[in-house]
Image (tube, rainbow, N blue to C red; front, side, top):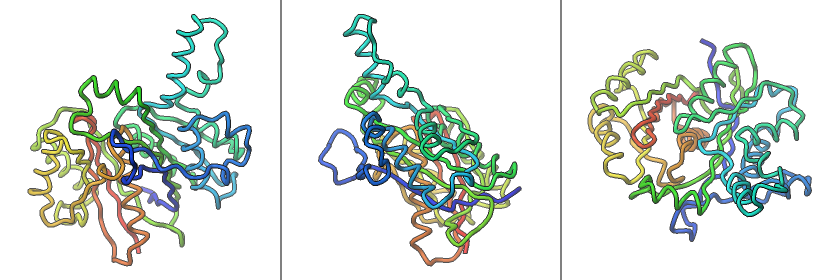
Length: 318
């Protein structure tokens, strides 16, 4: 198939030195330099400013007519705007409601805002597939490249609020786990350029409470599809989050299939959230740009609460 290259990246992610001990909050930039319209910026919620800024930065050097698709992904969407609208319903007894929080709480707001600001009249899609949202968007982006599109903007956005953090705690979803948030954007291209950082080889997902043996079989099959063996994987990146039960499969795979590979994690830097695997891709691709090492093959394996599993295969090109 047509190769898919990552030609540019951008990220707004958590600051591990943050004073917030409950969860990892994103280290936000000065939005004024990128979203120059003060009125527009003032109307945007925090997550929208994060996503729009990150997306605009990723395509800053590309003319609008050369962006042939905008594909975004989120697990929980615009939580703060949703909370604001629901609170207004209660406080105003369902009367005289401000429609702005409702309009901006929809999942496709970020992709739409990027298109409006840059006047990009192209394919625009948003995926909300829980822990597989990013992978679904990535696969769609790859398919757009295979169809003949030259440049695809792919991005993920998730936020956490005090209310959502409390709810997740009450549901027992954050036991021994540090939550996080962030926005990552990637410019996918159909050909290798001087700015190319990596090549996306493949992506695979499955939904199941699978055993280590079943996961191993799926990894073997996935690698075989791309004419690879576990021994040929140079770097194995896993989504360890501190929960002993959820980390067990990662540790078992590191000791069995990938004992010869360099093993590392990423959720200790960004926290746990539905689209955290996008941070893993950003981390790997950023490392490629900083290294002078020869060609490398990287496998990212992540699962979201042991149900949504994903495999992403990336290669560094010389």
